[in-house]
Image (cartoon, rainbow, N blue to C red):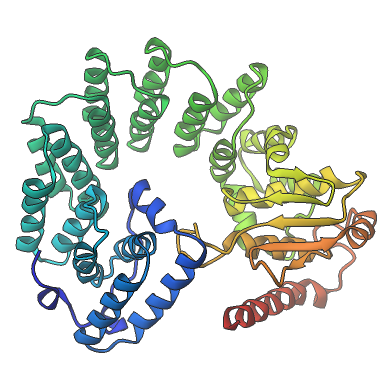
Length: 475
């Protein structure tokens, strides 16, 4: 790669592009980091925002890479790439010079795509050719790199360039299950379901057993393009390929129907799963509830008439939704406790509701289910709701699930408060929770509230919560 100095654009914050492109799952996993790595990453981003010259930014980057662990440095690099920050390019240069550096196909492809998007075509081509000549030993390794390049370039809207890599890929002798799986994924990201299905059939004909995920990716790609008949044909072909209808296949089917908002088909599959005693997973729960537009709008608005019980929620959906199947979907999930049972942990000292992995819509419904479940039960000494601090949010550091949990529980009159030791956990003692639950159910949809209270309560709750978050961030 060229020297850092030639790649550094003026690093003023106003000149940086800040948006989150569609990133590969691998890049998101690395960027998730955790613990002290995440806190040091936040400090790095703050320092880089304050730099006003290329030299200052270079010193900050080299100091960070030289003093932090490999995990912390790679997480910061992934975050910069996902944010399309031009400083990801000199950061990558610094990483390649670290003593622990190991070449990564994912990062090299992402940097090459960012260079191309920024107009540095020559540097992008140089990085790609150097990567192939210096780090890749076999045809299969090159093929996998081309798949990563297809995914990275397509995520930045560079479809023509991504298709060039596909043409190169097709001119090579291909082998190996991993190569075909990566190619199917990349073609689906490009929005090419027909080509992806051809590759899937080729994979099967060569004896490489695909998983439900590959069928689901192709089917969903058809669904997004509006070819619902083709989507259902691919779903049906899973059985012919020997894919057993288990948890993975069930999630795949729910994902496909949720992508095209086919509530009737989702309802049919949920009932079939119940008969086969296949419980929905967290992913399946998210797929179904996120596809319910009426429910999503209720949660997004967080208005004063937000239902605070499962009964109130169903009643509200029946009044606002024009789709009967949407209401039935929510009722079907509310009637099952399987997802809640997995998310709720009981011990002698604590009962905990873990909202990790749930979307804001799913978290809202799960909280209402949870309140119904703990009512009338003997509680341990402490009750808590674990909602995280936004490390895995689309916009990292924005704890949307925590904010929703605080808002909903505060409107319920719950005693659960943000823990002083863990900013991703709401906690309360048993006696206070028992007293609160004994007063339930609360009045629904604003009844017995004065007009002033109806209009001001949500603002007051939000104001106090925002103040608490501000002071916790200062600490």
